[in-house]
Image 1 (cartoon, each protein chain N blue to C red):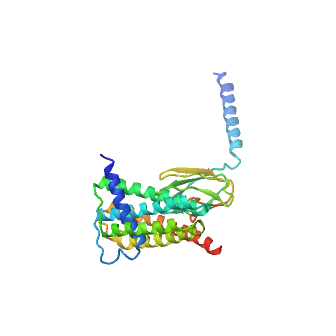
Image 2: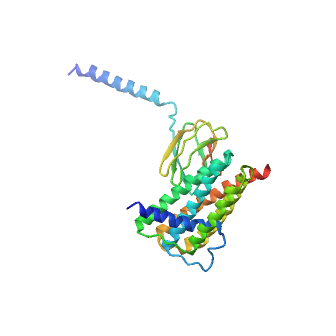
Image 3: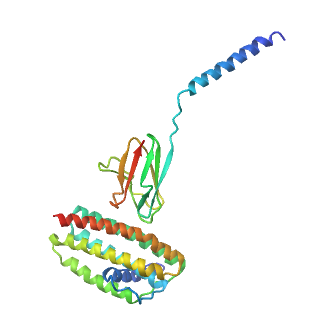
Length: 114
Length: 182
């Protein structure tokens, strides 16, 4: 029986050590990135303006009959290319951006990084 | 043999759509259309605008005009495909009518007018026509085709098409303003 105590004692130390380690590891705030959806419907980006955090993901889904695209404006720094009806495309947001549909130039949207 | 049915549908619809496009005031108060006739009108109008875009591709060298014409071709083709799919599903046989005949007849005159334009004057004539045509079609779809359509799916398709037509109109007006500045 006397041999059990050192083992038990060591075991408790191990549990405490592991607990401390895990506590230390999780102490910096965990950044959880969200995913948002913008529907392309009735020839509009819905919502047209979206507030996000840096590195959040935005998914655009084309619900219209006709094809659309999602293109950064004014520099065309990024684009989805044509999205047929039912297709989707996503981007991880690095910074605020204005965008539009280069097929239907009157359709505009905005990503605002908070 | 199966290929004949969609072709007949397209032809019929193209006729009606053309009439609506070129005769804004035609399909008004006293016109009564069945679902078969409405489907025909819708497809015809779309086909006529595709035909105008084809002329633009042949005659224009302006980047904005060519881009607009491509959008018209792609969008109106997508709408026709939806309409044909619906008509096939509903087993509706599109039916020629006075509106469709008038549309086609007027569209022929418009095509002649566009083909007669010089390279210098074509772009403005094409875009001016697109603005007029889309205004006319939006009016006809909203005040005649949607209210008179009996089938819910046909009504919904027509309602879904209106925002596209309005975006086309806004796009055409934007290009039109560019010509006005020159």
